[in-house]
Length: 196
Image (cartoon, rainbow, N blue to C red; front, top):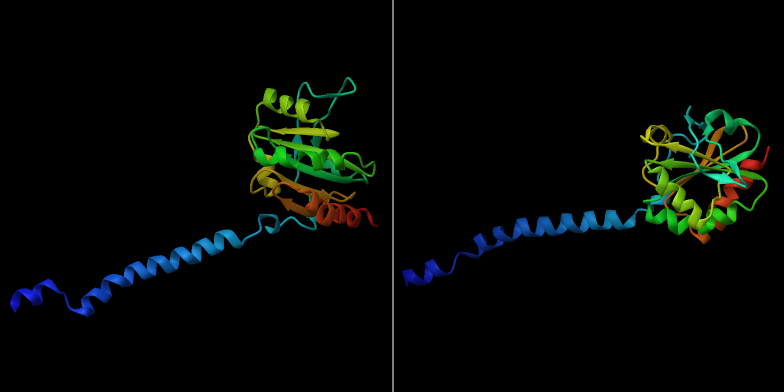
């Protein structure tokens, strides 16, 4: 009889063994739900309705439009009366490639300026990217060390900002712009920024 008692542990001891397993499973479920429920395009920005941060970015050397060099850009150029779409991109960014057709479509508008902030990229790779896919930008500033992107509060590339004619950031979109997002979010933000 003593052998049988030692082979079968008491039920109370077995239930304590399950407690850590159940706690782990519960925490895993909570974390998975949190990771999957967030929409990265809805990340808040502390810069909305504030002036664009001060910066002065050099041009992407070798980038031209109609044989003229495409200039870099600075914060002062965002307060010249026109709405500017500032897109943070890099050649090594796969989602940047996904959103590029939407940027090319937005570049057809004559009521906005398109500025590209090239983030931590190699010059040759950035040129190859734009030469292969097309250049939607009227200005491209090179942020080689990522300092300007930090000042803009960039979480990752791509990110897109709408800046009104006074140089105030009025909208931010995080992630690649889809056709639907362009239609339902970015264009309405541009239209709103154009209103006096």
